[in-house]
Image 1 (cartoon, rainbow, N blue to C red):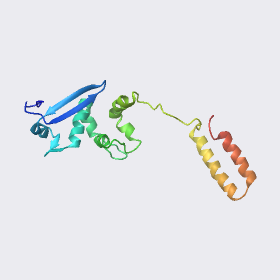
Image 2 (cartoon, helix red, strand yellow):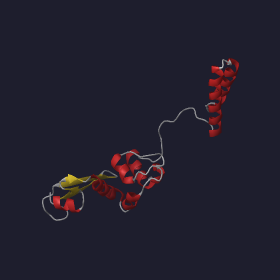
Image 3 (cartoon, rainbow, N blue to C red):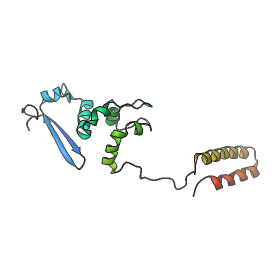
Image 4 (tube, helix red, strand yellow):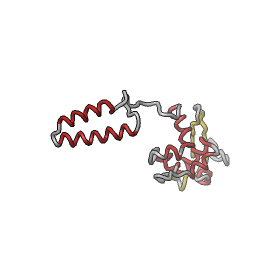
Length: 163
C-alpha cells in the first residue's frame, strides 16, 4: 500500500467502520502519521487516533464534542470514548449529541427498551410513605408491638407497589 499523503510505502493503517457497515481505510507512512499526530516516536498516540476516528464518524460535530465536559463529574467526551465508560448519570445529558449516534449504531435505538420492574411505585410521595412505614415497622417489631407491626405490614402491602 502507498501512503495516502505522500505516496511512499504505508506502514500505518487505520480502518474505521461507519454506519451501514462502510469501511474507510487510511494508509500512511511513518512520517505522515507522525505529522498527523497519530503516532509519536513509533508509539501509537491513542487520543489522536480516537480523535481522528471520532472525527471521521461524526464529521464537523467532532470538534465541538471534543471540547465537551460534564459539569457534574468533569469527564470529557474524549475521555469517555477512550475509557468506554461514563462518569455519572448526568453525562447522558451533557454528551447527548455524541451519545445518540453511538447508541443508534450499537443498539439501533436511543431509548431504553430493556427490563423494568413489574411492580412500580405510583409516585414519589407513595414511595416516601412506604419508606416511612417500613422504618416504623422495624421499630414496632423491635418494641414487640406486633399488632402495630401487622397494621403497618398491611398498609405497606396495599400501597407498596402498583400492580
